[in-house]
Image 1 (cartoon, rainbow, N blue to C red):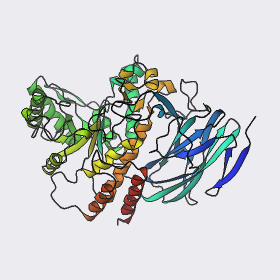
Image 2: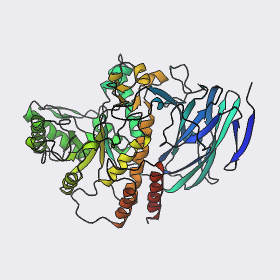
Image 3: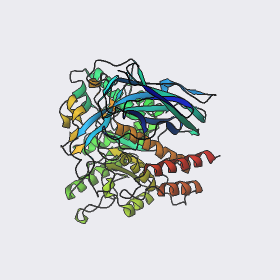
Image 4: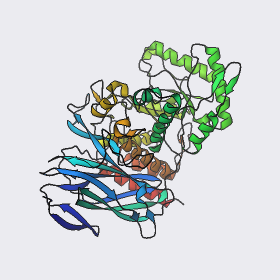
Length: 554
């Protein structure tokens, strides 16, 4: 028997919900922890704000109540201001896939239970066709009694969208029964986020790591096409992959650079996709003279394209004894002698790990410490000398207050680090892997138990393999969406302050009034990597203040 319907009004629109005891369709913040058994919240409408050329996420939670719901799906209308329209085609919908976490990630005390993470698209991202028949279909879906199901929605505000208040609605149904019509109000600010990204980044491990699992029998051409889908997905989230496919020309001592289309591919990535960091392969390390000739040729090639300032080489990863410190010095000296225009990046803190090892000063141009090992005084000194600051996270290292990045942490852990980055003049970020699936065995293992070393839920993977969901490319995680939102926050800070790039690197001039105001807003929310607000409303209020600063600019 179908449940009776109760009608009530929100935002001037008619909304319906079942009279089934305990059933509800409610709205959650992206920064709110909502598990499969979380009790329904009270929010029944959507009120969001965004600039043009920005994404605004919406979370619709369908709670079944005392009886199950079957064949649930959702649709969305256009969003209209009366004078302008954001077409419904700009709104992507996903069903969240839940993962069972029976024990918290290492060194954490997070709740156990079923967490949402993988976001299965309603339609094929490449073709727009409905998806069906896969192991994990998005819609329709069922909801068990007393349980939740989540629909994540990405509203893309197209470039050039006029400011104003845009209204529309989501309709959620179960079979032939309308569960709810959820009103939407989107306030579009009177400015546009730049296509060019303020934060540089390296999201690692694409290439053979992904194709060996999703397409082990593929040809080189097929593997390259699959990799491009993953590259595009990361870039769509303002995340620059450490590997960008076939963009590096061959080089030989006798023939030099052999550019067979790489320069065209690289130009498209920088000009059209706004890639702002290029990790150069560090070949021939066992043959220093050959390595220097190769690096000099690469630097000349990049200089000719106008991209040398984007290039860097990743030195020895996490040097952790005197011998490895010496390796970094040797690598750094070789690169500087061959091509001083190529920056040298090292995942090490700005203060030596052990005084007996010496230090890495003079060998590193881009310092990339762990959040838990950030040393503010020495980092500030390296910045004053003209060097650059990045940061990274891996596993659950550092003091417990550090915002680690596992599936079961609070969502604000993915937001706070980029506000802290502004606080410390950090202009780059590294995450060691986006697709470290080998740790989980099979594609199905990635989808069902992504526990790196059985201790770190979701570590090293922000994308899920697409074939179990019926698509060739990747399936994004909620964590990647939260990172995108935090990257957009960082754009607000850069716009409000009126700066791009390394505002303090080698710059002794006093900050502008706009920078001071921006710094003050950020300081109200975060202090350090261990002292930051855990209240989502603090970030939202600060973001509104940043938007007001931006709109006051001439």
